[in-house]
Length: 623
Image 1 (cartoon, rainbow, N blue to C red):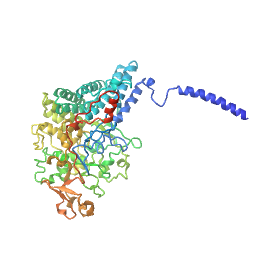
Image 2 (cartoon, rainbow, N blue to C red):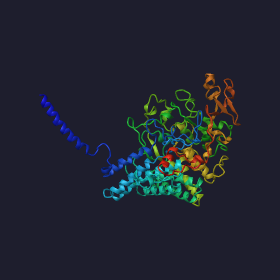
Image 3 (cartoon, rainbow, N blue to C red):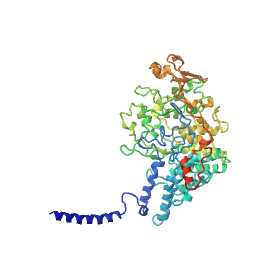
């Protein structure tokens, strides 16, 4: 018996060895094989989907905050922090993978996504012409070039000049791999060509939530507006600026004249919807589903979770009054003292409806709990949640739709409201470069269409009124307007600040206008607003702050009077605690808001790597 077992074992071993050899020579069915993958349009779609969560971020997923509102894009002149203000770096990092997602709202010195897009284009071009129809071939080449253009826009937003790689390269092509930076103007020309091919060839309809020509047009309107104004204000390259801006207008015109989109829902119905399918403002959105892919952004708008930064007085002052005038000369606030014009109740009642739609209406939650410790400036953003989540007593601890990382509300990726603002600003800028003047009809299609956004029942119940239409012949007289900006462009920028508050773009906007000095907090009285909140009378609006434990608030709670005087609570000066709320424990930002901050430094490790290979990588200007 023993011998039989041994023989059986020997035979089975030989059989297994033979089978193993055959198995090892078979293609891997669990991972893509580059030699056999590029055979069908289905495989191309799967590969393209790998770009989606990197670019169409929406509310990201789980607790990840990169590029999200409220938690990710929180470095700008609209916000203030408790303790030290977030600051630009003042030294060059040595780490190769330095993260620039906060202070530069973009990517690090990292070209893997460029390489992936180039690989995608290379494999289609070399192996699929005989497999795809001409239409399909051009569509997928367009998809590859679109994502490549987007990645280069992100790189330029952070670093300015970057090396442009036309084609897919291998590890042996070191002369190309270690090339120095190309000029930004050169890269912009390449990016425009990539976007042009994508715009001309990507399908108008490729299925639900798939990249299509309308989404491409929205992206072009965004990035070409950015690049056009950056070329104008930073480089004084008006010829390239006009090319970019004309392209932005063309792309936005395509969306406008399609008549597919409109502004027909309130903010909370847009940003807090559990299903954006059919929403006429959404050009592209990211869909979430319970138990599958969820996020946490609604939780950070539910008046239960703390917000790291709070809106500041500078942002509040930018909101126009509903009579179409600035707070300086509005009849809506003419009888109110200067400070009280910026009380929370007054701003809700008198400002553009987007104020009430962006910020919670009270210092208290519906359950009676004060929100004072949840936001540094006392005012709480609740823009990215539906009304139920904050106003009807649903607490995050009770309903998973509004708590933890189990939110399933959909996120707009491209929305028509932004496109309208991109379009009107580009037209106004082109007018300064020899193009046609902006007309009242242009204003009606864009800014006034946004001002006609429907009010929901909650806003109406609070007495919120739509802002009167903008009249191009009678623009507001704003004494705070920068002298180098026309009245029209100033008001378009104001409209953008109100409409897109807390979304992706404020830091991008002030960079492309060459206005990073707006980030300063101490060098001029003009910038003191950056660390202040609303006007508040603690005695009547938050009395618990004065009757609570003195040790917790004395020396911490402060207000600023209209003459600039700071009053610090000492436990007994209750009557003096009326003024602009000073963000608690706030310390000024470092004042290195200079020319070099328009471009991030390249980490030392990258420059050293080039040197070890015998090549040179130029550092960013000023670093």
